[in-house]
Length: 337
Image (cartoon, rainbow, N blue to C red; front, side, top):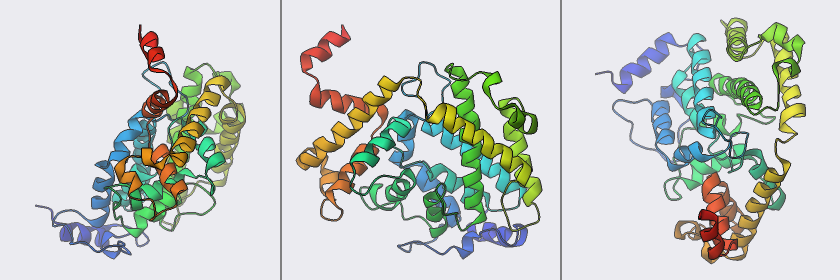
């Protein structure tokens, strides 16, 4: 049997000097008895994998709202792609793969239904705004396990909180997830945008394709290999200037041509309307919130509790809740005939 202490010994002996070691974690908010078999980062991975918020990712939009087709990404498939890329990078650089996997699996738990449309809507109506990385941290700290939170290690929480935005994670494993997230969403969003007819191969910036590759697989391979080659033997996880510049240019192209456009502006407007209506309804009628959410009022501002509830919905649950609140029952019957 491979016990936790043996795994910790292997980490100390085999991982790079600058890799995070589970035995040297900064710890948890609430101390717990060590597991006989798993390291602390492995326990965090399992806590995230088995939580309800993780399961709901399969019914949350990644980029396209209600896509017609089985091959479009969801938040769950995106999360798994990020995890795979991060694990490949950290394994090759002799970093802590378990820590990277835990961060990657938890990094998008706070995303709203309806993708960026939902996030924009909550940002408009919540008094203190809304950022999905901050919400992901709220999910693991306060929302899961009926308000007790998952009580994760400091290193995993740091990676989740800073996987996007101006502040970098403080561990190299967190930086690997940050880059893996970028690699994943740039490339799979190109793939999905082409499937949806928003982009053609010839629309992509050709100077970037010459450097990164013309196919989905070639670009991902180029980016990952570049990080490994450029960072190997150093206390760093980063792209070379050449590949980094081409990646940034491709990302800027996607923001201009895809993220700031819409395949269906009317549908995105309806999604924002649904989110705003749900938030305003439960803010005005907190007694309509589920009992476990009502119990948090007082511990947190009402706006935060309502935001937690609405942000945690899946796309289909948000639509169903809106319909129950605002659409007459007879219309439901007619619609189903």
